[in-house]
Length: 489
Image (tube, rainbow, N blue to C red; front, side):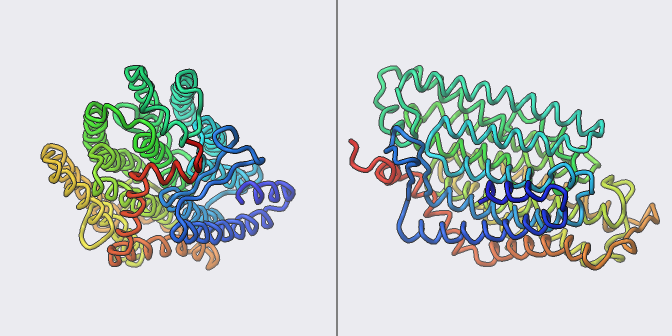
C-alpha cells in the first residue's frame, strides 16, 4: 500500500496539494487494511504468503503473526498522524523534494521488516528504511542536519555490515535464510559455538538499529535536527524495528545456550535504561531530552526479552505498543510548542500553562505515561517488566527499572517547570499567525494519540490480552513453523 501511494504521488510531483491529499488518503487506507489483517490473524492464526508461487523455504515469504500484525497497525496509526501533522509543519522546500513519497517509502520499509519471513529480505527492508530515512534526515541541507545525518548513516551502515556478515555466515552454516526453516535447522547444528557467534553478530547489528548501550550515540546526535514531523516518526518507529528484530530472532531462531544470551541481553538492557535517562537529565533542549529517553525506554523492552518469560515478553510487547504512541506524541507536542513560541530550548520558554492550558494538558498525558504514573499506559508497561524481574529473582534489574522510572519523572517535571510553569522569559508568541486549518492539523494528531494513550491505560485488560497472545505466539515456535512450511518436515 505505501509503495503504491508513493508511486502515485510521484506522478503529481508539481502538485503539492495533491500529494498531501493522496498521502493522507493512502495512510487511512493503510490503517484500514492493517486492521483487517490483525482481525484475520486474531481469528485464524499466523498466515504466510509465498511470492511468485515459490514454496517456502525457497521463495520470498511474507508472514503475519499477531506480534507483526500489531506492529503493522501501530505503524499505520503513526503514519496517519504524521501525514496530517506534516501538512502544518513541513515547508515548501521539503514538499518539493518529494517529502510525501519518501514518507510512504519509509513506511513501506517498516512494514516490510515487520512482515518478512526471510533474513536476507529483512536486510533488504532495513536498507529501504535507511535510504528513505537518510534522505528525510538530510533534506533541507542545514549544517546540523548534515552533521546528524552523517553520524546516523555511518553508524547504520556499520550495523548493515554486521547484519550482512551475519546473514552470510548463517547461510553458509545452515544453507537457508527462511526464518521458519532456520528455526528447525539452527538448534540441530553441530557447531553451536559458531551459532552463538552469529547470534551476537545479529545482536550487535540490531542493537545499533535499536540504539542500545553502548551503540546509541548516533540517535541523540541526529533526531533533534530535522523538522519535528520527521523526528516524531523516527522516534516512534525506527528503533522499534530493531527491537522487533531482536524479539523475532531470539525467540524463534537462536534458542540454545539461553543462559549466556539472557545474561548479555539483560546486562545491556539495564545499562541502556540507565545511560539513556542520565543523558536526558543533563539536557535543556526539548527534543534532545526526548531523544535520550528513547534510549532509556528501549532498555525496558530489551529487559523484557532478556527475562524471556511469558510475563516478561508480554510486558515487552506492551511496552513497545505504549512507547510508540507516547513518544511520537511527545515529539508532536514539542512541535506545537515550537509553532506557538518559536523555540525548543527550555530556557527560552515558560508561562505556557496559563496561556495555553490545553497544550499543557496534551503534554501531561504522554509525559506522565512515559514516567509511569498510574493509571496511564506507561505504568502498566513498567509494572509488567518489574513484576517479571521480581518473578525471576532479578532484583538488580527491577531496582534499575524503578530508579530509571524516577529519573524519567524528573525529566518530565523539568520540562513541565521550564515550558509551562515558570514565568515567561520571552514574550514571543506566534499563535496569531496560525490559521484554523493549521491549528487543526497540529492538534488532531496529538489529540488522537493522547486518546489512544488514555484508552490503553484505562482498558488495560483488553490490551494486556492482545500483548499476552502476541507473546504466546512468539513462544509457540511450532505454530509459526507450520504456518510457513506446512508439513515440509
